[in-house]
Length: 189
Image (cartoon, rainbow, N blue to C red):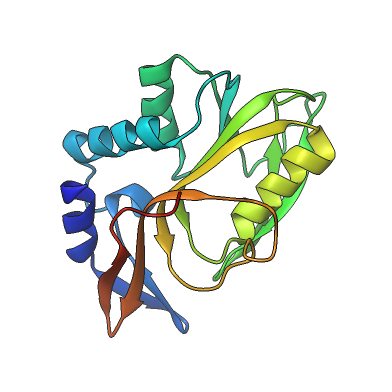
């Protein structure tokens, strides 16, 4: 993952309160996302994720969309986007998500009981969004979560640590003294 690793090492750091936040094409859309980086990431996801018999890729808006779209195109697995807007459609399931710097409601449409899903997101940091999604999919919808992948994990404690959920990652980083530090270049299995 040479391009992902280097792009993270080059990422600018901003502060949101006491939270150090790296700005990256995968997680923020700036600087611009080069096709080579996206291609590298999708190939690694295909190699790492359990995709056999997956009915749907499920991703939260907004920054999981580009990764999930590319994966959908490469695998022919349909894509469901968890939206921040309520549509009031039949079967819509609300969930509350909380991150290190915000909180909001999100809404799941087009996932039904028994659907076998891959949950894919850009960054796992506090785990608040991912936990809310996984809880809603399993407890409220009754979907079968086949696998969970986050491209980048910000190392440290998160809300998934004391759960049965296992999130595979492509690379694990931390932010120290205003710089991204690679903790595990291979990520979590």
